[in-house]
Length: 93
Image 1 (cartoon, rainbow, N blue to C red):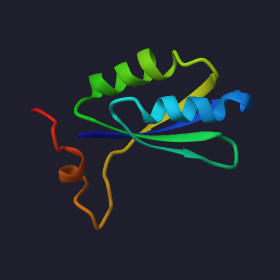
Image 2 (image 1 turned 90 degrees about the vertical axis):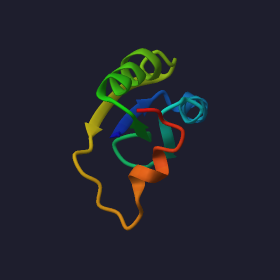
Image 3 (image 1 turned 30 degrees about the horizontal axis):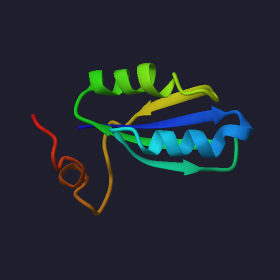
Image 4 (image 1 turned 135 degrees about the vertical axis):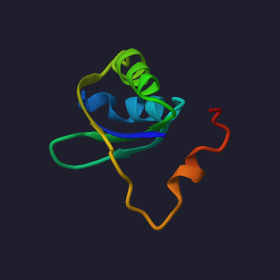
């Protein structure tokens, strides 16, 4: 499983609309509206790097209102929860 955090700058009038559309996309597990340098944070969990590339470049970046993104790929997860099994339900190898 590949986990990534995507930081997004969005036109201010479209933040809610973009957040809802992102949250509905397969592979995006959570979307947060945040304060600070960025407007939204999206957590992505997909099976492979190719899925991540497709989701970010072909689906996310095509949404009207997104001005800029910064994608961070997680190398390792530190959690008291078994994230791998939680997010792999229904994923085929």
